[in-house]
Image 1: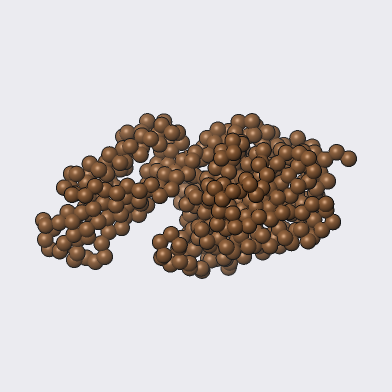
Image 2: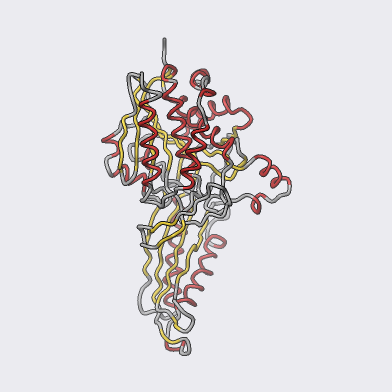
Length: 434
C-alpha cells in the first residue's frame, strides 16, 4: 500500500499551490450560510470543469459533474478503469459569526438566513473553506496521476453540515442514483491543533449532537405587578441552572457528555414581563445510553420547573437537528493508520482521543451500509502552538472552531490537507499495472 501512494504522490511537487491559496482566500472572503452555499458550489463546479479542459484534456475519461443535489450539493465522478470506488467529502457552509481575525481577506459579508429571515454576519469560522480548497487540489493531483491508480474517484461537496441536514438531504435527493455506490467514504476536518499534524482513531471519533428549541410559556404583564404574572425569565433562569446538574450529577463521570444552553431569548423592553422565553440547547454524547439519559433528564427538568412556576401551558420541546455519532470503521482505519504513518511519519498521531464536536459525514456511508473514516489535521501556526503549549495557555491563546478569531495558517495546513486526502484515496483505490 505504501508503494502505491508513494508512486501516486511522486509528482506532487508539480502541483502549483499558488492558485489554491488564492482560491482559499476567495472562499474565505465569500462565505454562505447553511442552505445557501451557492458561491462555494459554483466555484467547485467551475474548477472541476477546468480540470476536464486542462489536466484531463487528453485523458480517456473526465469528471462527470452532478449539481444541485440536496440543495447546493455537488459531486464529481472520475472513472479510471476497473477498481474500487472511493468517495472524498468536503463541507461548504459557513457560520453566523462576525469575523474578528483582522486578516486582509477576512469576511465582511452579511446574509439573510433562510432559516429565520434575519440578516446575520457570515464567516468561515469552522474551516470548511479549507476543506473545499484541499479537496479541489486533491482532485487535480489525482487527475494528473491517472497512470498510478485505477478505480473510481468521487469528490463530493456537501451543503448544510452545520445544521446536520446536508448529508441526509443529498442522500434523500437521490445521490446514489446519480453517482456510483462508493466502497468507502473518507473525510477530514481542520482543527485547533499544531499545523502539520494528522490524527485519527478507530471507533467513536466524534460525538452525537442533539439540538433543541424549548419554548417556556409564562404569563406576561406590567413590570410593576409581577404577582399577576408568571415570569418566563425567572423560569428560564431556573431551567438553565438545573440543566447544568445533569452532566455533573446524573451522568456517569467516566461517560463523556455536554449540555450547553447557547441562547436564551425573552422580552423586548425593561418594563414588560414577557409571556414566553425560548432556550436553544445543544447536547453532546458519545454513546446511545448517555444520550438517552441526558435527553430524558432534560425533558423532566423543563417540565418540572414549568409546573413549579405554575405554568398553565406545557412547554414546547422541539428537536431541531441531530448529528449521529461518527464511528470510524475498524478495518478502514487500520489501513489508513498504516498509510498515514508511513507517509507523515512523526507528524501522524495514531491515538487521537474522541472529541465532542459532531459531524454528519457518516450518513453518506451508513445510508448505504458502507464503511467510513474521518480524520483530523492541524491548522495552528507551529510557533504559536509551541509557545502557547510551553506557557500552558492553549485554551486561552488558540482560537477554536466557531470562534470569530479562528484562522488556520495557510501553510502547511493546505498542503497537509491535500496530501492526506490523496494518501487516503490511494490507500483504497487500485494500482495501475503497466
